[in-house]
Image (cartoon, rainbow, N blue to C red; front, side, top):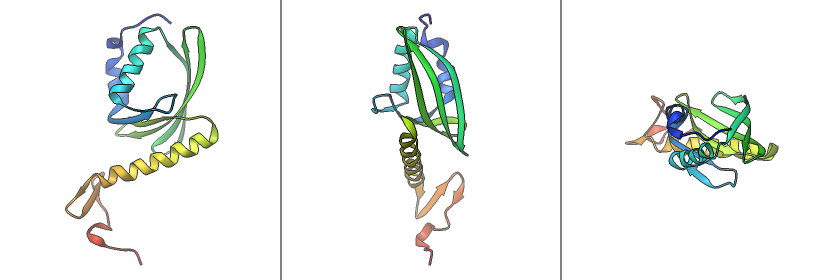
Length: 141
């Protein structure tokens, strides 16, 4: 591909990634939205090209995304397990094989629970507009 300026795709990037985006790169390093943006800026400046994008939904808010990344004459197939919130990607984990997909699914569920806990207000857990039946110490017998 040819070198491109990130300004050409910045609105698409912002429309695709949630403000609270978290993910991992191909080295397993944790990245946030700003770091992901910098990584994509570098790739575009180097003329990287993404082709053959496949999207397989695995749950109501999760999908496996596979694509070919061509850069500097090399072609790499990458897979990411993504979680969607408010029609944007809130989490994207680079995965390798079935065990990587299972681990990414478990971590995504764990982070979803942590997000719910972050919405706590005065002994009431509010998530997506619903109050938990367990708010105020209610227990299941």
